[in-house]
Structures are given as structure tokens and as C-alpha cells.
Length: 525
Image (cartoon, rainbow, N blue to C red):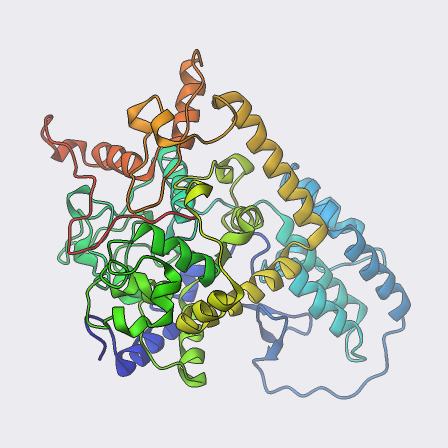
């Protein structure tokens, strides 16, 4: 077993628990255009299961006899091409009209059959792109009738119906990966919709990190009368069975990753006081003889190696074998609905918006906990390769989920629409900057005029902040302040609001962590 963590046997047990998804699939139903597994009835009246990858398996033992291609094959292909060409426009239009009008929009595409199947037969079971792929494959099958093809087409368009915004969320706040900015987004959404947060006991900013998460670390949780919270987003070392105890089974799980090369350069600057870094003058010096400074038994050693691996609950010093890497990736995929990439933050926010069924303003943000460029160090190619090798487990996680990130964009949104959405997001961010900020951007800590907006400073990093414009009306000032309030101050205010009835008027929740830990939240850069 690793010091203070899990060994291989426990890793396998965690994978099994994650794979079984104690948060049941019934509670994980997707809205809108998200992949999921759901049972349906096809046009032959047989029970079938559709998967997110477009595969379809009969649940009956009925066998099909070879048949000739449908008489209207060319007409079906025409309908399919029309649907593909207009899918994104239809989805955009569909969000602004009522259900009856959407039904009419769907009927427009049923030109090849005067008697299409009732809308009620179709269920929102897959993403539009996955359904397109499946329908395109099915159209080549000589065993499908025109009516069956229309049923598939109907499923293709129905996911564009309005979805219900998700309010039960688990965000694994990975260090040094723009996670403070994401947390601000969750804080704002939760505050505006009166949602509850799973706060650390006493109102700290970490859930007894670096220990594996336990439900009893959450303020207000009791095993005898378990309480469920809407949002869990404070720093923790992930352990899914325990997380499941404090959030609804339908909760949406996501996290964000960062290129391990940039992550380690940032970690060295911010956690310079960590045991592994305190005796070296530069990252290059550390990497020349890492084991001369790095001790796997140090309680803060994770800041110096495979930090993402550690945050996901695994051993950062584990063997880098194909089997172990595969096991880790499967465990993460089994537990999380979405992995974002900080290098593509705007694209990540568009994808998150789609998955959560939120509006644009809910995911617009100003970068928080960003580091002044003067404290960033350029890295030689040799150092870059050494970082990759030293953080090999992180590198395997990052490269895998960077690939699946773009695969999901291609499948669920498409590159052209993504470009339009990113443009709209950036334009809105620009509008808010012109409305809210003095100087349109971040400033050095010494230039921040409002002390309540000053971010925590630590290590050799110099963390930037913002100044709000003067003379804003009350509502606009409140909106702008939410966008730029640092994590510790925002978390403290929300804690006090949520547990106001339990706090004496003079008591202020602590701003630092409440368990053995090295440092609070890291920065993105």
C-alpha cells in the first residue's frame, strides 16, 4: 500500500465500485443531446437497448431473415441527408419554441412516409451525432422498413427538445487546472438558484485533503440521517463510494485536467515550500536528481509528482504499467460524466453548458487565481521531456482524456457550431468586462483597491485580481462582484449564508483548510 493512500488491491476495489456505479443509471438519465443507455421499443415491437456509441443489441431472441433493400431507399437517404444538413439549425430553433411547435418541426422531416410513428414512441436516448451515426449504419441494412427509419430519424431530432438544467453536481477540483475559475461558476450558479453546497466542516476550503474523501468531512452530514447536497466542489481526494453518500444519485460528475508539463511548472512556483521543492533553486535542478529531494513517504509529496493522479484518488508513485494505466482510465471513465481540458477552457465551458443545460451567462467567467507572467519560467525541450517522464501517470490521463474531449465535441456539437459558441462566449465575456472592470483586465495584488477582492498569495507566484468599476447600480455591482470574488472569500460567504442559523453573530468561518494539508488552492498558471 502507498503511504497514506491506496495500494493496487484497493485501486482494483475502487475501480469495481466505480464500474458498478452505486449512483444508479436510473438516476443518471441525461437530458437533451447527451449519451446514455436506455431501453426502448423498436418498430417491430421488440425490446432493444441503445448505447452511447450507437450500438444496438436485441434483447429478444428473435432472428431476422435476410430481406431486400426498402423500396424507398433513395427517398430515405434524401430525408437523412436533409436531417444531417439542418440538425444544428433545428436544435437551435427548437430551444426557442414550445413543444407543439417542435413536434411540427420534426414532422417536416417525415416526407417519405405519410404515417410516421407517434412521437411518444421515441425516447431521448442518445446524442444527436451518435444517433446520426447509428441511423446512417441502419440505412444500409436491407432489413429496415421506411417506418423503422422514420422512427430512428424521430429519435435524432427529439433530443433537441428543451432540457432541464442540472442542479446536482460533483466537481473534482484538480489542483493547478483552472479549477478556481470553474468553482466560481458553480458558486454563482448555486447562489443564484438557492442550492446547497457540501462544505468542509467548519467552513474551510478543503475536505480534509490530502486524505481520501469521507462523507463525515462534510458539514451537516450524519450517518444516522444522511443529508444530500446539490453541489460538491471543494478540494478533496476522490473516493466515489463516499462521495455518493452526500449527493443525489443523479448527480453529474465532472473534472478538469491540465497538461502535466504546465501543471508541474506552476506547482513548483506555488508550492515552493513543499518538502520536495524547498531545497532546490529551480525545477531543472529538481529534475536532474528528483529522488535526491523527493520522498514518497512525505505527506506533501503529491505536489511534486503526478498531482492529477493523486487528486483522482490513485497512488502517484504507482507502477506505470499498461494494465495499471488501463485500470485507472476505466475507473475515471466509470465515475465521471465529463473531463474538461484547461488549455481549451472556452471550448470546455461550451461543452459543460451543453451537458448541464445551462445558459451562456452561467458559464461565462473571468480567470481567477491566475499567475503574473513574470513568475513563469520557460522550459527547455529536455526539461519538458523529463517532466513528462516524471509525471508519466498524469501524462497518460491527460493524453487519453484530451483525445476523448475532442471526440465528444465532434460527436455532440461539431467543430463549426463549437466555433460559433466560443465566439459568443468570448463576446459576452468582453461585454461583462466593459461593464464590470476597471481597465478591462486583471491587476497585480498591490493594485487591488478592495481588500475583499484580494486573492491569497503564496509561494513565488504572484496572483492577480480585479478592480470593479465605481458607480455601478446595485444589481449590476452584485453580478460583477460575484464574477471576481476570490474562492476563499466566496466560499466563506456562502458557508455563512447556508449555515447562518447555526453560527453566532460574531463567528466567522475559517478561510483555511481544516485538516492536515500543505497549502490551499493552487493557481491555474
